[in-house]
Length: 379
View 1 (cartoon, one colour):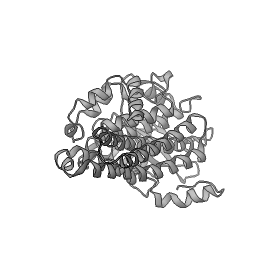
View 2 (cartoon, helix red, strand yellow):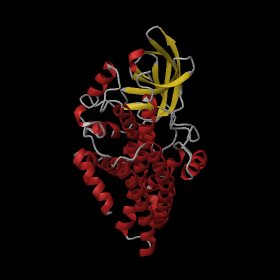
View 3 (tube, rainbow, N blue to C red):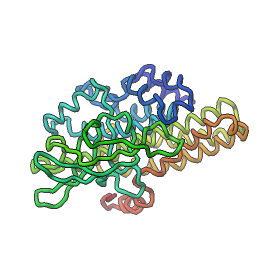
View 4 (cartoon, rainbow, N blue to C red):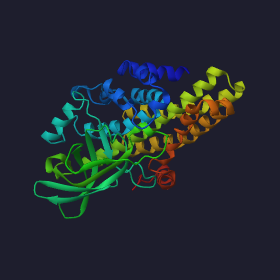
């Protein structure tokens, strides 16, 4: 497929040799628990795609980012799903680092070494719970002298085995004593942080989506990002950047899996020309929606308008991608299903998009209200 080849060329420009290295791993091994695929991503400089150039990264624009994610998703849906959480975290943290430094000295020092040390970041938000607010705290924080003690669990938590840093949403006492949202930065080797098996499906098994437990983990004050009287919108801005990027990134990865399957149908000439066209139209339409949102974000659309646009694109894309993958599998036929199980796994790898928050049921009314002129409230 031409558009997928274009996406691969963009990926090769930022991460030379990454796709080739992934494809050299047999598909069954590439997508299995214990796969070396995440390590391959890191070895080819994958962590720096969205990191601003002044911090040593590529500073890729949104359009290039979704194309890279699509290319990676075509090669390894597990890697695309896993690294979404790293890129999502990058989008939030660096949005506060520039143009004005809205983070503390230790936090800025951490951001300066992400690319140099190829630090993979996992996210302790709520992406595994469809109807839950993506930013709902999954960890409790108890104030102690010099910081907080964190307890709780995140399951599933992508990149659990390879992460060097976990970002966890927590509720901390505000100036008036009422709880307010904050973000804790927790080293993966912190005492009390442990990783346990959780993922039981063969689909996306190489994304390292396990359970991360925190048992009385100490985090100092200067590694907690929270609002201040001088910067009252800090967390709001972080959330806005996060939800926009999360939806674009995760959808683009699944779009890659559907495109890879469509490519097999075209290469083998399966079905009629009209049926092949249906496969391509659905796959390409889905990604065109995501590219449209990426262009809008690149050109300055932000806030509620960007959130509304990305959610509309995501919900439309998840239907189109599922339909394309289902028809692709049908056209490839029963013998292929029996003898080429990786095609069935590719098709199955498209469906988990429906599980990522916010679920359509919880977002439909806010989106309808927003279209009619109200504010967008996804809480």
